[in-house]
Image 1 (cartoon, rainbow, N blue to C red):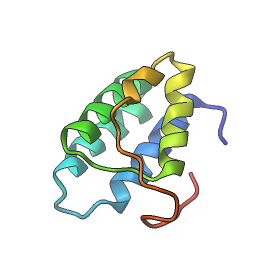
Image 2 (tube, rainbow, N blue to C red):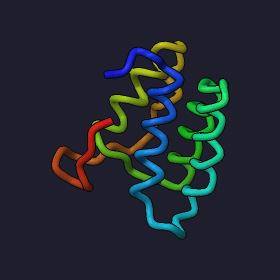
Image 3 (cartoon, rainbow, N blue to C red):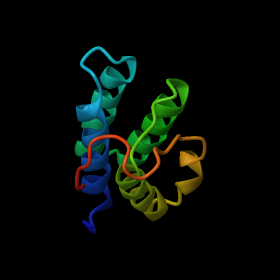
Length: 97
């Protein structure tokens, strides 16, 4: 796993966004979060992405959650991820973040 939490945040958000349908309502917001993470605001990206995922009830894969959780833990923000729905192993397309 990457040791740079900003990069890890960006890659996790990109992976989540990229597997959503083009017209999924969370996709646009996650694009903004991805840009925030890439441009030096990973804490804002984690906070907003977690809110977006919870608001739209968008489930994420376990590997996506682990990557986001690792970045959030670095910023002492792991509790922000409470309420995100994590798909059981084997559901959803697989990827490596």
